[in-house]
Length: 251
Image 1 (cartoon, rainbow, N blue to C red):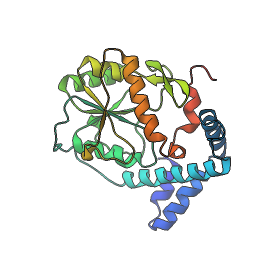
Image 2: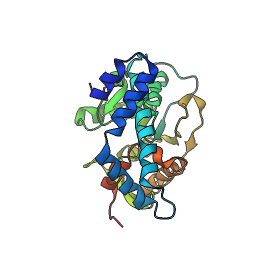
Image 3: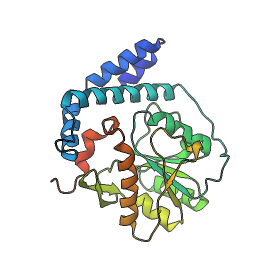
């Protein structure tokens, strides 16, 4: 288990938990500089904020993530039955500070969640997780879920090396964006819905993406959904340090 999670879980006082979370977040000095460099390439002067303000906002966001993940790690859940039809729905979102609690809640609605790895803080029913980097077995599980019309959730704001992807505009740069699950969703006649930050899936406050045969156009629309939501509070995004890995041609 990650050191920060072990330490925060060992505390019973909420103030001490917050103090520890902030302390761990403050240790990420190199990543903070890298994050600010990526941010500045997306927000040229005069739109960008100074590094000190950016760093403070990022520390707050990361510490909030730590606390959200720690809270999630102490919970257990059973697969629930949704109150509204969820069949043939592909949901997507982005890495905002409290996404661990949202991710955990998805099991209550029978969602299959696509993950690269199983995080130590997520007590999620294993049969509803697909670790998409684990090869043929996981691919078969995904196809089985699609054939059954199961609701599926994934994060669109990161693209692993070797992942099937397309180029798409995001935050002023041409970025690699994962496309495999989107192509499959279109093939299996799924609806595609964006869930904004801090919105529960139970709220049914989804933003539907217009579907068409050109997967690039669909992903452009999906990236635009994330971008518009992220820009409401850009310094809260947890993946600023890795954004340059997605850039196709840095400009």
